[in-house]
Structure formats: structure tokens, C-alpha cells
Length: 201
Image 1 (cartoon, rainbow, N blue to C red):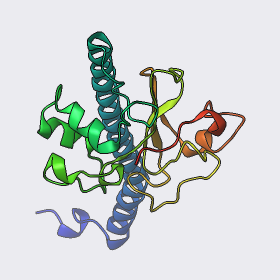
Image 2: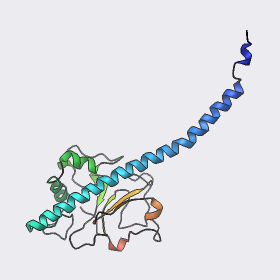
Image 3: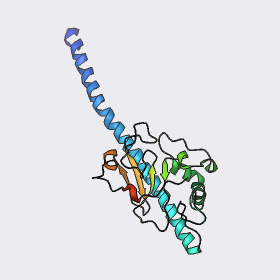
Image 4: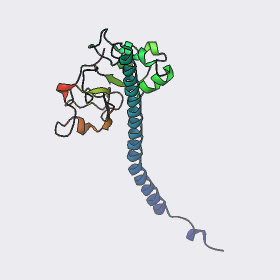
């Protein structure tokens, strides 16, 4: 019969294995968390793209019918407020789809469309754009970033993504997820505060 002592692990061997597992876990957790945030940002970018497409299609229909602009802003007659824009989206999208598109981590979207009274009830800042604005102006950004003041970096607690990244969707449909260093550095960003429309009320 073999001696049990020769088959057992020593305490030092167990501690070494446990410490190696701990180091590997410590290295893996930030990578997994970063991948999760990137996935969430990509989902929010897709939502912004759907909102842009819906608004673009509504505006084409309005132009064909001789009606006012469907883009949110004050240059239309009558002014397209956030509420008017939100209600017009229901001509193309279901209420549940609109709620999903307005959602993001750390954002509590009201349960009914009527209760979404301002952009602050959503994941997005909405900017005043219309038929006269260039397709390159910003239409939507996540609320942790204001395109009017791109040199002001978002704080770690800013809703919805803090300083992890921002989603920017332009009027023409060009959307992107930016890292904070690219939206706060004038040498590397395409966002010019002097050309951006004001936020929609």
C-alpha cells in the first residue's frame, strides 16, 4: 500500500495554485467588464441609428405631403418639441420599441410613452436639427456627453456610461462610439461645438 503522504498536495502547493487562479481572475475581470460595456455601447448606437432612420423616414413622408419638418427643433412651424417628435415616432415604431430604443444602462425609462416627457427620461440628448442643417451635425448623443461643449469630459458617474464612452449619431445617419479621449481632444475629434444645434426641450 502506498504512503498517503506521497499522494497529497502540500499546503504550499495549494497556496501557489490558489494564488495563480486569483491572479488570472484579476486579469480577466477588467477585460470581461470592458467587453460588456462595449457591447452595451454598441446596442445604444444601434438604438440611435433606428431613431435616426425613423425620423428621416418621417421627414421624407412630411416633405411628400407638404407638411412641416419631422426633425426635432425650433426652425419648423410649428416647433417640433421633444414631445411632438416622440409622438411622431409612433407613426413608424411601436410604443414598446420606442421605449427600448430610449433605454440604456442606469436609465429608467417610464413605462408609458406619454410619461417620457423630456430627453432626460431617455438615454439620449436630442439636438435641434431640421432640413436646413448639414447632415454632419449631431442629432443624438448619449446623455453623458454634450456636443455643444465637447471639451468638457463626462464624469465617471454621468448617465448612462460615465467616462467609458459616448454614442454620437449625426443627422445624416453616421454614428459612432467614441472613447472619451477622442471627444475631449480638439486634435482628434470631428465634433465642432460651434456648428452644433442646441438641445431640444
